[in-house]
Image (cartoon, helix red, strand yellow):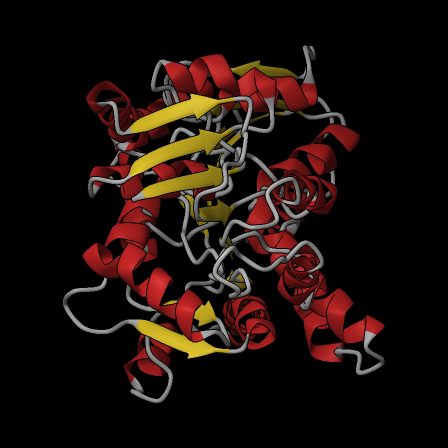
Length: 433
């Protein structure tokens, strides 16, 4: 089957490679020229595990082509639209291209996180160019919603072995086409949940809102646990053991980040506000998260009696989550700004995100990017763990203690055992511990 994937997002690149891997001829239409040459060589700018090799394999096999141009033809056009949320104008331009072939059947599969109702709007634009075919029948020009449910760090598995798929569709021809395209990824059981396009778009945002709510709720509980002298880890395990609740997204920490996650929550809040319904809950979820990003700073501020000027602090982790090189809305950004405002110097290590951090912060005398975690500890008054990369989980604590000027660890992700760390002579601060 000949397919087109339009967009430069992580979703677009994973979708294109996955569809090509099952034998389809896929054109990845790149709308941002700066990505073109890198992708031609199989280099995804998203640094997703396994994605570079996946893309290169499909390009080498001839099943995946990368192009800055897309020229519709008179044959059936099956197009996955996987653009960034701010690219609605580019989506409309694509629809206008399709208008030059009004007798061709068009299936537009919208994966983009646009405002609720956008898929219906795009279909209306498609239908304005619908004409009768030579046999007297009317062309099928349908837009459906297939929301992007991928998670950075496991995006390939999320597409090829999905737990569930949301399909917003009210057309039998379009549903049959989508089912056939996704059949190789939907064999264990039928994971496709069919609903209206608006319902699918809204469900995607509601899922994100629910996950963010769980995170912020547990962060609130962790802060209360601190004042009650309760270990939030025991509480988390007890709450997660209840089958009505489950264990996912109950880990307290120093706040969540990520471009898509944060943006989707804000998009949901905006949708509720613009509809006149409003949502005090979501507004509070976002407010709790922003306060939580300053948690480690507040603990540090109190420990050093409000005097941080001239001190040096080591930070492990800058990416908004392990496995990513991105720092979009990452907790470390708020932490850095707060520490710099008090005249502190930062030495920081991250396995992947230092280039992005340097681009964000620029060259500064109060910021040192370190090649190893232990290099960041030299002359530092305390260690702050912000991102729970696997290589931070079991470090050499004796070396940490010998290198730090003071044996102080602030664990923003609760990955260490407080009792054990304290038995080694450290002053330990966790989140609700």
